[in-house]
Image (tube, rainbow, N blue to C red):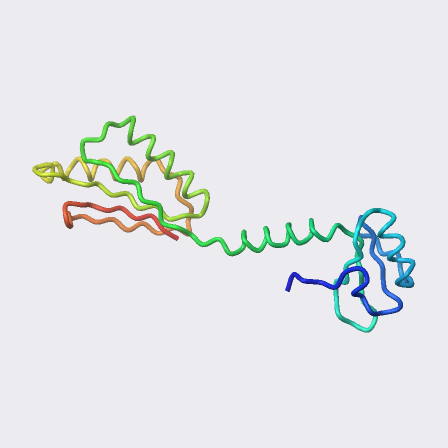
Length: 164
């Protein structure tokens, strides 16, 4: 898809030429177009496969780099980021976790907050619920996100999931 015919690979005798500023020059002989492109230190790239091909003068390696970069950006999948803390976590540490989560949400990622209980900490269930309330009040969550919140402890963990 990204591979195009360049320079001497172009078979047609005449082409429609577009310069570096995307201005249409018009119908030009291939030899003259190649001479112009080489004069600027650029490549002549065929952009379509029709009877009268449209060719652009550009740096082909730079074009490929930017095109693959754009494809990777389009393919980026949303990830789920895990943020784990304990029920007795201080408010300053909780604020740091909230800032991290906000960055993840701005990057279109899902965030899973997990409160991990050890031993008798399960009796501090109300602290975990308060922590989740603070998180939900502080975060700026876009409308297309859903919030799933566990109201019970499962395997010594309590989870709050904010996802797309």
